[in-house]
Length: 271
Image 1 (cartoon, rainbow, N blue to C red):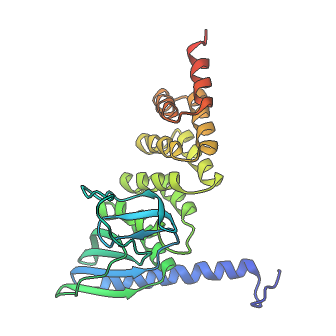
Image 2 (image 1 turned 120 degrees about the vertical axis):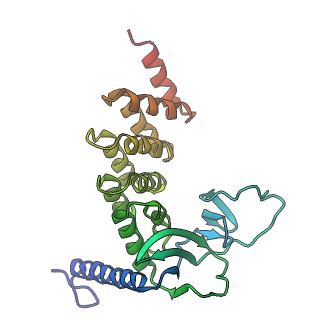
Image 3 (image 1 turned 180 degrees about the horizontal axis):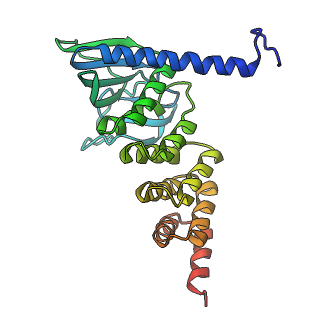
């Protein structure tokens, strides 16, 4: 076993890190479950490129004041005439707890908490990995709206690679459909060919839930063209499900990619 500067093999070190993170998440779960009925707050570091106004807007892919995409609708506000600070964190999560069970969950970035009143338990700042592990576990085991909303805080946690967990979540038929669709959507936003391959695998899984497979087709349409378009073309040509082929063709039609036009010509001129 190769020895690192820390005096332990690299594989063992990774394993130890995962064990520590899982144990910390269990501790966080116990703290939340032990809170009295009411609201539980916690905060943790956001990953680079994420910022928010502390209310309804969370921006992604931000660099030097410019952001690539917005993940939360800012409503009717006109961003060209209203200025607000976009704080690079922290992530703030507010949960309604009843009998140790999470009934609702809201995520903010930036801003500051209002002064806590009766019925509010503030757990302060927790580790980002600990928080991400907890929220992904919540998404996997819960069956109501809290599960669906638990995915988002996990994907914006600092120093955490979540796409392998999102793939497992999306493939797990015991997980609520809404949570699985959220997992598929964020897989579509994740960088890297590995995530695109996983989405293609979801589409090809004939035993999978139809809505989840359709969401995977949409997620592929959100990938960079060099990754998403070839995968969509494969689905349009080869997938045995006519509805999924139609979905793939629809999104190819929105891509403005010459490879899509070539496919359409091929399909339309096929004898």
